[in-house]
Length: 116
Image 1 (cartoon, rainbow, N blue to C red):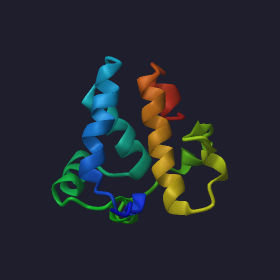
Image 2 (image 1 turned 120 degrees about the vertical axis):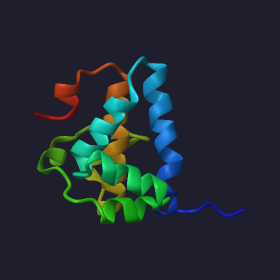
Image 3 (image 1 turned 30 degrees about the horizontal axis):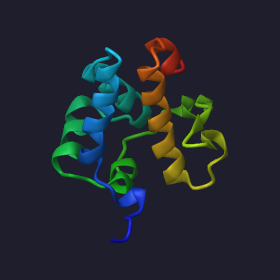
Image 4 (image 1 turned 180 degrees about the horizontal axis):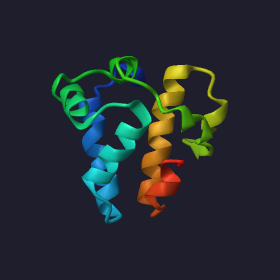
């Protein structure tokens, strides 16, 4: 069976994985939601609507109210690739989110994760 591009994956399928990763490290769903909302500009209702509609990652990021202007401060490696060097804007947004969830799971404080 051919692999589907990550952009065609449903956000609703990945969301529980983000929560599981956070929970394994004693972090909460609320913290995951705070990160997602900070990055994308969704409020809680908008985030839930995206989950309920089973939007793809492509749609989820395309419909995001406003990517946080500080997202360019997210630096580091995810899956062996530096997020700041990713050329494809959609893939970079996906990896930004992955990086933030990784930082949460590693115990980093929210003020540093959210680049205030």
